Length: 272
Image (cartoon, rainbow, N blue to C red; front, side, top):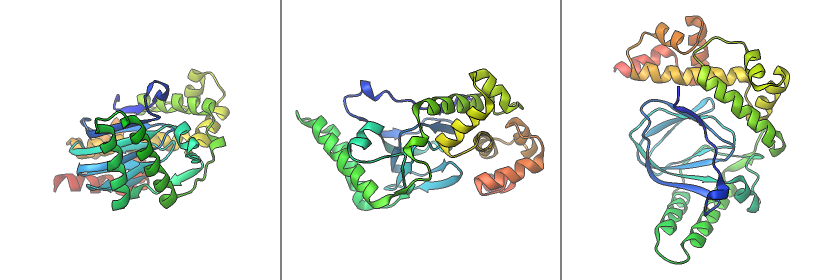
């Protein structure tokens, strides 16, 4: 399904060392899944959004800051949501003394002072003066330094685990999974397509993302199933088959483990 994306940002072509999307409205009809090496910081402006980061769910309200740490799969499912989005380059963070792959940020943050600092980045970017870019950059630096000072902790995976070559292989693997998650295929098919050994491929994905290929596949399948359960009237066993699960019991067990609720509970909440 084409809603699942590997995001790659070319910061060399940007006037500032970060991407700032302002007042964005989620325009995706259904679920979407993104994954990239850079961190992503979202500030909710209107509405509410439930975002799954790896296997945890976070529901944001206006004023909340949601952080997607380096290399984390993140999925959303709602469309009635407006937000600002900041994606700093790894080089920008490194220049501030921040190793984004060695540190993890608290995902859901409710901090009025940090929210005000985020809003100041947007304000500086919109002011019409000859120093706009410099002031916007300074505001972003202030926000990111305060963010990491208050809410960071050591990551389980260091920057050495996320080499560019390994990351490129992980991108290819996850692209294959998102394009073929509804099919039944052996993992060896992926390594043959990429042209490397299965053992090396599995090691690249695990060391880069902290998750195995099977964990990624089940996560993508369960998020697709969540979309179908909440947005269609398909029966649960039909959803399981549509998302590549062989057997209703395995689907129910895996869905419960990853999503934290059973498929039947999700369906009941839709019907209420």
